[in-house]
Amino acid sequence: MSELRIFSAPAGSGAPQPSLSSSDPALIGEALAARGIGFERWPARQALAADAQPAEILAAYGPEIERVQASGSYPTVDAIRMTPDHPDRQALRQKFLAEHTHSEDEVRFFVEGRGLFCLHIGEEVLQVLCETGDFLRVPAGTKHWFDMGSTPQFTAIRFFDNPDGWVAQFSGDAIAERFPLLD
Image (cartoon, rainbow, N blue to C red):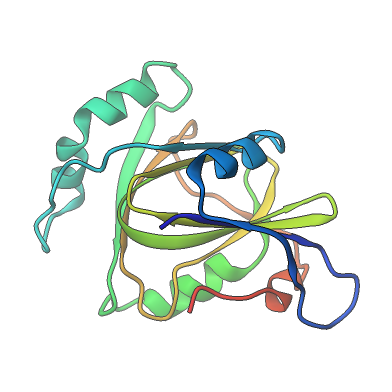
């Protein structure tokens, strides 16, 4: 079940406590929209084979991809699948856990599994547990990090306005270390 937790960004050490925690999709959408983040629940209607390759994943969700691309904003699309036995899972997890920004929107449609997006907006950190059927749009320039967990299990369709795909600018801030992880 999707979940949103909102924390005040701590200035010092200590475990932060959420000021809001909800699994209500309508409340999640409203709270994120108030902060400029897009969130929708879509049906993840296709069962994918365990060995489905990116081209098969994209073909299975052709209508959803066409709907997003109809705006003209995201001409490049790919699919990422992470599994507990992926050979690069630990290195990728560490890379994604570092706070960063992008010069373009970060747009994801989770078609299987789950992942934790953490958004550092002003004096708040929002943790969005995205699960199957969640569509998330994080505007360019938003500080964030992503945790796929120590045993990742997700498939997401990624939309880009840049043909180079995922390009990050790391902030060097260790804020991500002060917040709960997916595990």
